[in-house]
Image 1 (spheres, rainbow, N blue to C red):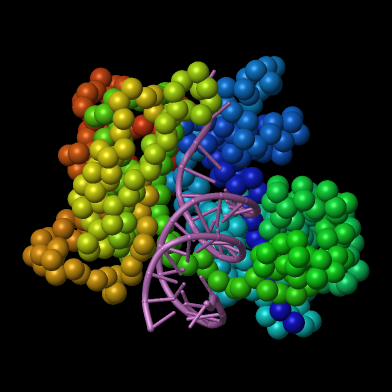
Image 2: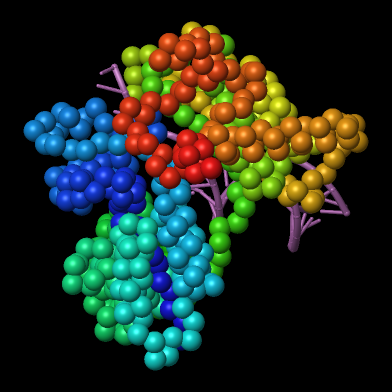
Length: 432
DNA sequence: TCTGGGGTCCTAGGACCC
DNA sequence: TCTGGGGTCCTAGGACCC
């Protein structure tokens, strides 16, 4: 018999912050999105206060005026590093595991006859808590969708000791009968509303619909969820493939209308995109740029546009990608609008070995030179932190907040960011 | 007079996930 | 004053080819 365990970090970002701030255990804590825009992670105490996911930060003080709430800007270096340690432990537990997102992974448990899976899960939680400091919940079931449901129970009921196992028909039916359809993995807002309209409110109601009815209402993805709830494993065991598109986009703290300032942001996003491209070893054939104004400001004139350019030769070189992104930007920029958000998108990926070169566009010597240059830039940025080395076109003029002249004025607001406890450049120096 | 059928590729839109 | 960012998959329809 094969089972699937889903292991996910409880309130991941909050738990990561608490590793270095144990004084905040049992206190309401939230972590904000990029730009300190809205709440993306909440501790259980914050949830109990009634803070909703996605609450804009400025509304937090209005809605909870007399509460002491610890607030953090997001610190992805910290979260990435700590969750990588969790994954290392999972790798030791089972050779067959795959990471599903920053904070969760599936472990495939084969030939489980006679194994005490419940005990295994409880011990795994203890081991991770001790080694990394982050609490995890473990759900185990015969399909991934049922395992996800089990992990929800593990998270919400103390009696499970962080691990819930669905291994009998009685437990499956019981769990389904307690589970709202809207919470099922694969059922989003739209599908839930559609099902509620038909009087289907619980996962069990859905699972007991006929296959024909489900197929007539949903596409193959919805039907797959139905099969999974009924115990048929059909979500493939796969690490997510290499990305087919890569995007770096941001909302600005204020609004920007100046051509030159926007151009520099676009250059920075393009440079970050090409870095991501090189990390996964692919090259892109299409570079695109989008701009948009603030949709919340109905009093201002709105403008959204997107433009893309197909390259003759797929590339992952910073210089090439930045240059093309700037050309796209020039095409769509219009004076007189207050822009709120912009981004760079790379598409039509090709893999390293298969990268085609167009003989009209190919200069071998230049190609090799750029490749070496990108390698050096990536290495310096990896050691020293993002934007240690940048292209001239990414540069912002002027001075930083400390009065010193600065090469790159960070676009992102993160007033409450914790230190990079585990990955700082200074730490590396001190270790030497 | 006569208006098939199968295949591929691309795009836009809708749904989902964390 | 202030409202995140980054992805995937599926489907239908049009263009085009033979």
